[in-house]
Amino acid sequence: MRDQNPLALEQQVCFALSVAARSVVAIYRPLLEPMGLTHPQYLVMLALWGESPLTQRRLSELLALDPGTLSPLLKRLEAIGYLRRERDPADERSLAITLTDSGRELRAEALKIPPAVVARLGLPIEDLQRLHGALTQVIAAAS
Amino acid sequence: MRDQNPLALEQQVCFALSVAARSVVAIYRPLLEPMGLTHPQYLVMLALWGESPLTQRRLSELLALDPGTLSPLLKRLEAIGYLRRERDPADERSLAITLTDSGRELRAEALKIPPAVVARLGLPIEDLQRLHGALTQVIAAAS
DNA sequence: GGCCAATAGTTTGTGCCCCAACTATTGTTA
DNA sequence: TAACAATAGTTGGGGCACAAACTATTGGCC
Image (cartoon, rainbow over all chains, first blue to last red; front, side):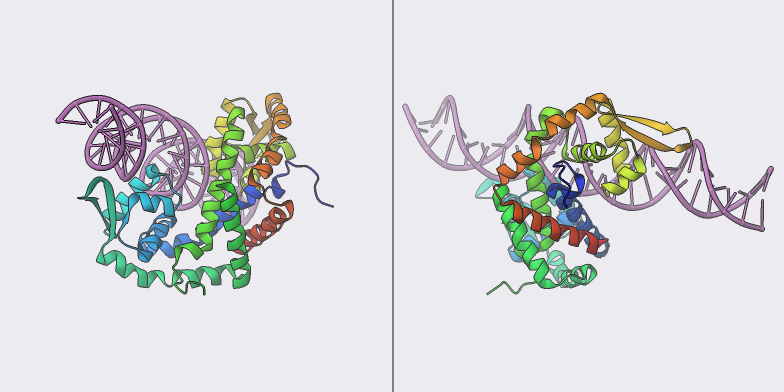
């Protein structure tokens, strides 16, 4: 029999979600550390490897991140030389975020990350894909 | 056909996990705000409603939280009157965390939260249970 | 053209998260 | 029993996350 207490910690989805997110990010930490990246910074790089330049606003949408979070984060990535932040001459409000050569070259290193994480987790790819689908549903439902 | 790029942002489980966790916590925010709680503080209260007193160390294990995170968080909960922090006379290193009457009474209010969240998400309970199982697997795999 | 609303970013404040260094207490062992 | 190791918690630093207040630019409209 399941615990009937609706406030039981162990059966809260929000708790499992928080712990899982932190646990998985913790797996990335030692892998990203040699590249000088945190996990949120890694996600920014993924977005830029997919398309560069991007406006900061577009990045903010893609990553579902507050502008107030993204702004200093991008400054750090600029400081370590992975990207440039330049105002769009056609619209001085907008910031164009562009990969530098150094940022582009980092992608080769990053290719090792996903297989390393999957190996470390030791879960079947199909399970991870199913999980990804379920999470996508939750994200859509929460929006 | 799936995107074959292993670094595609949209198919990273870690990204879906981060966004889903933030999105779901965002649903709790307005519900917890009247009680004066943040989501991590709510999780502490769930643990204490399950068992009180608890040592800070035990809480740290239950919530998978760093002592350095938990320590100030518990001070805030003490400041708003939901719990007491007292050294164990038998072992002065240990902190006993005990619900106050006010903290105990809060549980009645909190009973409204899970159904409100489930309603807001609008997903079938079975889906949420499946998701919880998958997340539990990931947490175990990551440990 | 001049006012006004909308838009893009920035800054500040509060809190979470982890790490590393630290203090204080307790347990172990030569 | 005196040294030493282990344990519990605290503190400070760097970074993330979000809200609210702010600046600067742009677009629409009289």
